[in-house]
Each structure stands twice: as structure tokens, then as C-alpha cells.
Length: 244
Length: 254
Image 1 (cartoon, rainbow over the protein chains, first blue to last red):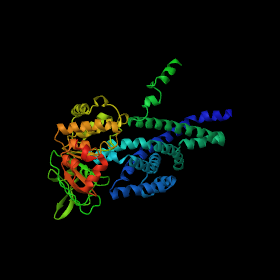
Image 2 (image 1 turned 120 degrees about the vertical axis):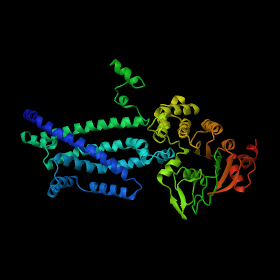
Image 3 (image 1 turned 90 degrees about the vertical axis):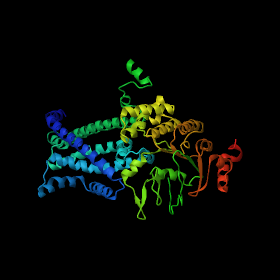
Image 4 (image 1 turned 180 degrees about the vertical axis):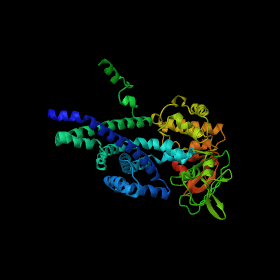
């Protein structure tokens, strides 16, 4: 067992490199996915059939085809047509478009869940469609979509593991290497723990975002209160904290 | 203002004018098309036929060469700015404070400076008795308070026409009075044209100068409130008022 930990210690710099690649893919993929989700989600609920149709085709295409196959297309097939991109860019693009297509459905559903009366009020106040969406409808839909987006983000993190197929030395790749000097049980055990920790941090961050979004709608406590960084109005928790 | 509808099921062959400064109350049973009229004027819904004119200008469609042609978006947008609406369910924006709700449209639609909009909003909040609630969230307020904010929000746009759609129907009986009191005051101190859909007959009596009785999508009787509530001519009006008021002949005349 001690050998295993020595091996882990030796492999740590490389595992850290892999971790950074995994995090870059996760953050880059999440940003692209979010942008894709918002654009497609908003287009998917337009009255204009062309805009809606365009969004639907893109959404169904990326949802309906395998992420691995998309990745291979971008990395191995496109270069045959003279279009080659760095592995990191391909990874982010595939993850972002694929999870963005799923996210689009979440965005669309959340926007549709905002009561019709809110739209009517924006019309009655002569706000333009864009102003209404940006300033009134989306901020309310945002609070509704965060829990589902949070799920998707964790899926995306785990989805990054397939980029080792396109020659990237991400966390999974380094864990696999660790197996050589240790054993399957130990190496993949380390993998489980590391992925779980990242997923947990992401979930906590998303929970914080959700608390903040809800508070802005006048529901629930503010973020510092939720994190217990500042004494709440009740005084009960804060006084016990001070005495401890 | 004139409206006509072809063979629309909700409103048929409807045609009426509202003069500037008029306070017109629309009464009638549910489903008689009263609320639909307000929603059409606010451009929340589209009619299948007919035209609405605001100050002589066609609102959503005009007749061109015998055809019914939709007006440009910019035209609708410009004309719509002269119309305000208060809804049954208030429809305040929960992602904004009371103050932000009120200054949103003046700043982002009318291009008013934030400072001027805030000063104006403070005056309006004073008027509706909620000066201390400027920084509250809508959901922290009672229904009556939310509706008062909604009234202030509509007034912040200086509408020439105000549409009031059953503004007290979602409120507890004991706070209906505070909202109606504010509207009464607005009616007395401004010359805003008002189209009112309400079941509060006493309010209709106090505020309006004309009452239109609707049934089955058409106007079946039109009169001043005095005549309508004390001496309705149409049988349908009599039975409706009887049901709403108990005994309209006696009570309303008092």
C-alpha cells in the first residue's frame, strides 16, 4: 500500500497537469455550452418558423448523435477537408455544442415557465421584445434553470473524460497511467475521489448561484446568509457562533 | 376610438367610441368579452377583423385598398406608449424592487434619466401611500400593496389611456377599498381616459361617466351610471345587476 502512495506522490505533478486540462475543458465547455444553450433556447421559442426551425435542427442533431462520434468527426474527419484544430479547441467545441443542445431545452422550458402575465406587463409598459426578455423574463427563468444546468455541468465534467480518445492527457489519461505503477483498484479509486471532489465543488458553486438568483426574486435568504458568512436576522445562529 | 369585428366569436359587430377624458366602465357576465376589449387595445391579443383607432391613428391594422393591413412594429410601439394597463394579477416584476419596477419603462423606453425617473417614482409611491416600500421586493408586499405599486408603475409612463382590468378581483374584500380609493383620486385629479372592467358597481358609479353593458360579445345597453344602475332598460341588464347588487333599484339609488 505504501508503494502505491509513493507512486501517487511521484505521479502527482502529471495528475495535476491532467487535472488542469480537465478543468480547462470543463470551464471552456461550460461557457460554450451556456452560450449555445441560451441562443438556441431563445430561438427555439420564437414565433418565426425559420428561427425556431434552425434551432430545432441544431438541437436535435447534437442531442441525437454520440458525443464520441462528434469528437471524432471534429478531430479526425474535418482535417481530411483541410480543417484541423488543436485538440483542446475540438474538445471544448464538442462538449460545448453537445451539452449546449441539452441546455437549450432547459433554457427554453424555463423561459416558457415564466408566467404569461410577465410578458404582458412588458408589453403594457412598451418594453421591446428584447428588453422584456433580457430585463424581465430571462432573470426569472434563470432562477428556474439553475438546478437543471447544475446537473448538466456535472455531466459535462464527467464527459470530458472521453477527450483522451483524441490524444489529450486529461485527468482520466493520467489516472490510467498511474495504474501501471500501482494497481487498477488504487488508480481508479483515486480517479473516483478526484472526479467526485470536482463535481462536489461545482455543485456547491451552482447552489450558491441558485441561492443568489432566488434572493434576487425576493425568495430565500441572501447568499452570505445562506453560506452563514454573516449573521442572519434571527440572531440564533449568530449568537451561538460567537460563543463557540 | 373605434372598433369593429367581423365574425369573431368573442366580440361581434362591436363598434364604440371613447372620447378623451372619458371614464367608461364595461360591465357584464364573465365571457361577455369585456376583458378581451382591454387586451385588444393593449395589443396583447390580435383581432381577426376590425380596426382600433387611438386619437385618429390606426393601432394595429389599417384598411388599405380594401384590405386589412398590419401596421409596422415601430408604429404600434409608439402608439402603445400612450396606453397603460393595470392587471388583475398585478404582474409586477419579481426580479426587481418596487422602485426598479416603476422606473424600468420610463428609463428604458422613454429615455428618462434615472434621477428624474426616481424622483417621479417617489412622488407616485407617495400618492399610492407606499413611500416606505421603494426598496422592497414585490413578493414582500400584500396583494393590495402590489396592486398599488402596479398602478404607480402604469402612471409613471404618463399614459393618456389607462386600462383597468378587474384590478380588485384578486384582492381580499377588506383591502379592495384602499385600491379603489387611489383610483378614485386619480380619476378626480387627472384627465386620463379610462377603460374599466370591474365588478365593483359602486366604484363604477363613482368614477365613470359612461357604462356599457356587454353580453355575448356585444354592447346591449349604454347609459350614464345614474341611469344604468337605477333604471336599466334591457331585461338582461336588469337581471345581471340584480344578481350582482342584490337589489339595484333600491340600493344603487341611495
